[in-house]
Image (cartoon, rainbow, N blue to C red; front, top):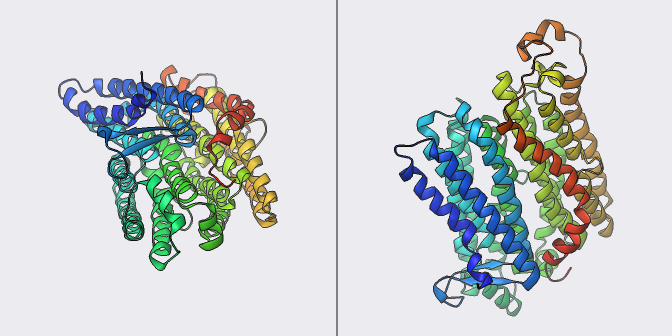
Length: 502
């Protein structure tokens, strides 16, 4: 079999699943979850196969209809796209397994088919953004994913429609900015194919339309990535969305914007253009550095776990942006590692928050107490391990991405950025240990308020069912296993994913 024939399978599987789930489940609504799980499993399987193929054979293009670019549309599978698409589909698989039961608790049965259909369309957009080799098709997939997320957010709590509307406004602005940037780029180059544009740019002078294109595309994708100060949609969206939506949106949604920025600015425009001629990389680095501190400080002030994790995500996205903005090999590897590591950490944390909401009826920090270490020991342990990873305690995954980011700051001799990375780790420790302390240590007044957080007797287990607990624990275990495998990942995959010039 031709290896390129498998390249389009992941996005196509999700697309067909998104179309057929509402049709097949007209009579059997309970099939929606199983169909989504089957599609996600198949997409994850083919993603792994494609990654192994690209590591063995090199870049694999897929041209739809046999039309040769720049006229035809193509997908590009290289080590970067193969790595990111495998990461997001494996994370999506774990979240869908958990959602198979959590959706039943938080969403009405009549909404299961459209809910799962929107999840499949969101993953269609995410996979399409990663695979496409065309600027306009990237916009199309960006809108497919965004429109799906608006609906996935809106079915949550009472405030979720407002959060979805805010995201709709900002997401539409972001998509509009990106599309305008593509228009200016087409005006300059006469092409929308990424490979063709990459070959044309070295022969052109840097003119005002090209600078405008760079700026508009950075702003548009920066909104999707939630780079400070373009993050305004994120806190409410993560907080008020249903738990399964938060669990799939936090690890995947913003990472797609980060991938698009890495692909377009480093692989198409080139390092020299974005660092020496138009300082896009420096702007991204400074905005991300401010976002790291901003998100960490505001996370400390939150009393709701999902909202704390939302502001924490603003800071964690800053790590990725900072790594890209450093524009050196250590920083780029650190950014790619953090795309994977943050996805694993946040998936685990949001699944635990969903477990708390299911069993306790809330996820408020001030209503937690030390009875959780007995009533929900495995969920509490998973949260603790993920929190330690977020802080960057070795040998968890969070340590290694921060290590490479620190090496990147040293290589660029930017000591302020190094100090920001170290300071943010201390701030992470403050707000995560506040939760850990509540779960494991007695606190004054807990005896009077215990009934609010743990209605069951001390020795009675309230742990969630195996279907909810298993994916949570798998993500928690991955935080250690992937940490030990980081050297292999860097040498085998990430060094091959570096853009030219590093």
